[in-house]
Image (cartoon, rainbow, N blue to C red; front, side, top):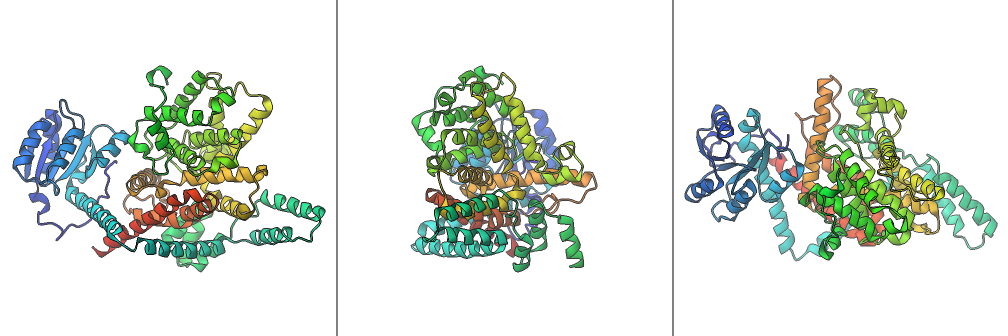
Length: 587
């Protein structure tokens, strides 16, 4: 399922080479695997297939002949697939040669490294016939997408009017933010603004001002911030597919929308030495590429992040216990999940870390809050099994029953986190006094529960209401800031450099498809954007950016101006997805 591209599209008129007249070179050191794949290719109608057993033989043939496709095994002796790929890409006459890596491993870091090194696709052995039949179609679409990205990059580099374009984008953002603000505005938000205005009047007594403050505190702790989301859908031209998805994600009744439309491990195995200054500095960047590291590297880097703030010493955390805790949390993430795996857990933690350091968010929080926020970030999806809350509730899963359909997965992640911590072998809090432990547990639970996407608008509105009146000495305000940081980090993929954002998008879609496959097998309605037979990645990404990511990054950049580059990257990526979608529509 790791094929990087979708599996259907006509290529008529798109190449001078007919699909089954392609020259294919297959390199694999396993004779049986070579023979099986060759027969499969011939069975699919490919006539010109050359087979070799070593990378060196392949390079000699590629230098002397013109091939359209190279199928390269990743794991080979002497010269492996990665080295072969790099050598092919270094040749001046191979720019049109499509290289597809094949391997029995489903390791996500291996997939990502191949794609980063210039592979056009990655197929898992045994390769299925339908993947081979659509070989050229998939390759062409990938090349088309790459050409679009390169063209956009050239335009960006050569343009003398980049500043004007950015200003236009900012204007569009302001307009969009205004529309979003109007859409999610609720009576309680208006009341809060009125009370804040009254508080700022000079002729009030301290007693009256204090009473108004108590009213604000009461309102902030209620559920009255739930946005009138239907109003937004009525006032904007939202297509049926996006509307169904938005209602589902925000905890609404997707079925009602449909009806309306119809009617209307071991410490010793790791090298724990401190990383170099350059690598530590890289950890603080907004552009960090988590997929460029191994899981072992990431565990060690987590240790570095906590140590950077002096948290381990401050809270008397036993170093050996902390390392065991990190490894235990890593083992509880399910590695076969395309998206909700340990890489995602680390990515959210690193993104929060960058907000605290480069974004200068740490100056608003105390040490126990930073400690709790980092622990919550690391554990926020621990044990996730790649199915969403709606599926668990629909199928009557035991977790949905246990947690009464309320933030099912998020409650489970909290429970599993503290189940780990209650084991003496992993209890990093064992030296804390009861009061500190109670405070820390409350912070961690509050942050993890805040990642429930159905609560997104509620938290967005709450923080927006205190944005211009944030008080560092107000514990409730600091808690809202912590929740804003972890929520933004949890959906930060679209704000990363596009190659990274694109890979995360593919992993999200694949995990969606796996749930959709399960729903189809169980004869359930297939959830929006989860139908493998009807993929729509561009629409998924643009809708998610418009309704979730852009609004929350706008609020974040207002509060932490140093995070503005993230918003700029997000807007550029949003434009790129539009260009990809428009290009596909014109074909």
